[in-house]
Amino acid sequence: YIADVRRTDPSLLKAGLAEDSFGRNVAEVTSGIAERNGAVFAVNGDYYGFREKGYVLRNGYLYRSVSNTKYPYGEDLVIWEDGSFEVIHEDAYTAEELEEAGARQVFSFGPALVNNGRIQVIEGEEVERAQITNPRTAIGMIEPLHYIMVVSDGRTEESIGLPLDRLAEVMLEQGCMVAYNLDGGGSSTIWFLGKVLNKPTTYGDVFEERTISDILYVGY
Image (cartoon, rainbow, N blue to C red; front, side):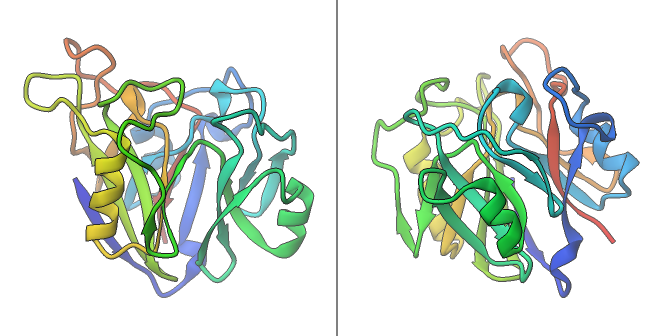
């Protein structure tokens, strides 16, 4: 599932939190968060609540400043006030520095798929918590205010999912100069105008939304 998103106002690309609250034990399905926030379109975020570390900055507010630089973590996506994307490493910046510099969102799942128009992952590369093929969610920027969001099903007879290198190829084929891997697996969900479009599944036998910490959405 590929969404081509074009906005005139960078503030309309937003993040939503489960139950409108920050916390490791706070979770809600993507559709619920999207509907409550008046979203038009949404995908799952980075499921920050699954981890105790990694920067969490949402809609300009810093929630967590504890870095997580142990491989394969620490490679973050920053969405700036002008709607541009940048891949940074938590070794290079504190969360407070990113906040002061005008970051609107900081996601800390990863890895980066494309940077400066070049694929950043190689065949067989994986984050330690993922299988080789999986349901996937990714977001990319063609240019500021022009975005691509991709969700792939997986773990079923109809779709085995995507490895990271193929996901990166998809983002590059769509014209992304920067692209970033968000939480996948059972979290991968794409929602549009009140309807979940894909088939979220954790094990391939039950199709239902997983409760997660956060979403990325387009609103008014």
